[in-house]
Length: 437
Image (cartoon, rainbow, N blue to C red; front, top):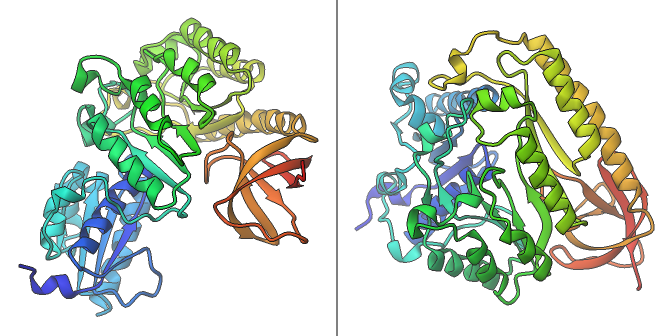
């Protein structure tokens, strides 16, 4: 039996990563199934209740979460809202501090409290809906989470503390969800987890990521499968042969290496050395010559010297990643790295971020220019600024390059694939036209 609160209109705000977004989509799917009116990040909404799914990973994300909470508390106190609820990583990590500092929040929930959130909002958690979500992405692509938590012990990361140990979802559950997504019109599925490549070890006592990937690739109508967040140590190399074999597995691997200097890698407790990293990356490039490799790096880790940073710069210049993200080290309470000496000044951290991105900018331009004159299968995401905006298999949404298409004589359909010939290139975008070939 539903309570009075189920008649209220709920507005869900999702902050942080794509894994958080999936949690928000699951929440909204459950609320919708309970006949509870729910919207997603609706501005100027007449919602009665706001649920904020917070991020607690790095300082900027934590501050954004706090600012968002305060914004909606102000709305509540001015009579525009009845209730504000907070869930997610920030709440999981700092629940007692938040209760003390922002007591006007009606209730705080942790990362695994979705059943309690639904109950608080007047609904009942429906187990038969596992895998059902209210998508917030464009209807032609969706994120698919295959596991929760992480068993790695990187010294800079608080995720295992927040999210707990690695827990793989059953393979049949993942396949069922993927089929449901495809039946709804999803053409591209982006696989996410803290560590894709640890999949199955906890549940099946062996790595089953390649087996899962093969099963997903056999789903009719699924045109692209994209891999996010693979880990260098213990990478299942049979995945490379599968990418070569299956045309619907994108030539795209997101593999955060974080650094290349052995001393820094050891301090980070990454579990892989410079030599092992180079060997794996070279093997990937050899077996997948067309691969788009995306990585992320951390600069300004405690004690990082100029020489160690320069080693990282040279590595990037020589290896030339197709896609690169750089973060200034952010100390996290409760992590091993937070207790390390020799803090690097913020000014130096920011200078190092800028230096690496300057190097990457030229690499990106060089790679993009090499595509001029070639034709690529391109998925149209949206229309913006007079262009159709799309992506090739080498680019993930929101974080990577885009294809800008001028098509005055032909109307293109959002969510559809077209062959696009590249006409010119910029640092982080390419420009093209639909090819008649």
